[in-house]
Image (cartoon, rainbow, N blue to C red; front, top):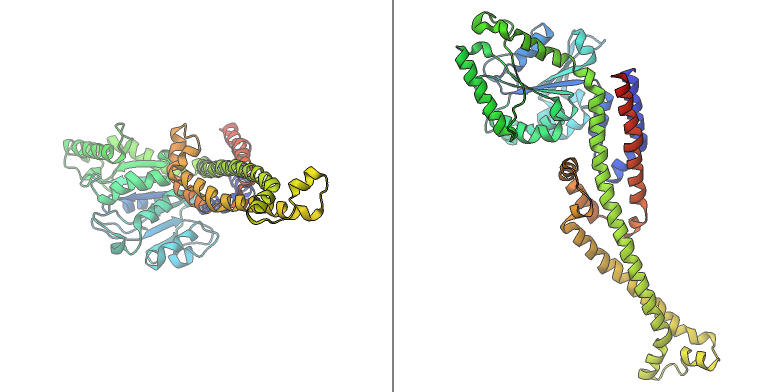
Length: 449
């Protein structure tokens, strides 16, 4: 299976079958389009002194990124390779290139764009992937301090990435405020858990084995607090290749260090799986929105049918007895339609008042529905919209938290003309894509593996 061709086929089907629905339900598909259009990405994040740039330089086999104990680089830097040779491309050009998946980053403003760039280097393994180096995380940093929302930017990059490597150093093992926010909130919302790798670098700076064990234990404890989980994810231990491997018996950790590098190099192999995971999640979010809108539309149609039935029955009473009531109070008309029917002498003019009464009753029923019953029903639905669908799995409960606000906006904007089958038809299209197209893609991956 040619991965590029397969990726192109996935993009074509998503665009053809789902793009109108993403637009219809005001759900952004920008991240999907971005993921589909470019190469695999590895995002490397961590504290400002966690050894990110040193590790990247080692992967590249040359000094590309600046290194140091203090913050030395406050930019997001994409590092990749192609046939056009080496060179630096400024952020303003990167975010304007429709062939790259970074156009959405325009929204973060000039301050971010001036701290964003792409570097082309001569590294064969980067022809099929890209590495993103990031500014070091700090304590007590606000959007005003950086000039842009760092966590939102980080979340967008994490969504694009096929692997996120979160690095720590022994001296600040997870105590940085931005690190806590990233692990607790940003990464779980933006990336699958299987895509996140934890690493403690610079272990060569530990004075003794007990010092290393103490730092490792501190990191494990901090991770358990940040993730809210009792089971601790694997933490790779690594060190600078320039250090003497005899110190602390670093040669004992050499295999683990190489395994971390191999994991990064293997990121492209998981690209299609990650694309399908993202599509699966986005389409199921779309399904939940369509389910709610379909069920609300069905409730509205039922309510309308009841209103029409009541209006028609009331109209029949008005049709037959309005003339009698008017005659009793005003003496007009001289002869009612009901009396004419009983006398067997009905003339066309006898139907004028009854028909006006019937039409007026139906008009009042229509106004009652549109101005009172329908808005009141929408208001009740908005009080607890999750009751409109079955959240029978943790997965659907999680998706609901992501789409609830969009559902509320959709309900608030629901128009009467939209209650006639369009949402159910859209839901059927989404279910068909999940059951047919998406399953076909998964089967093709399984057949290859």
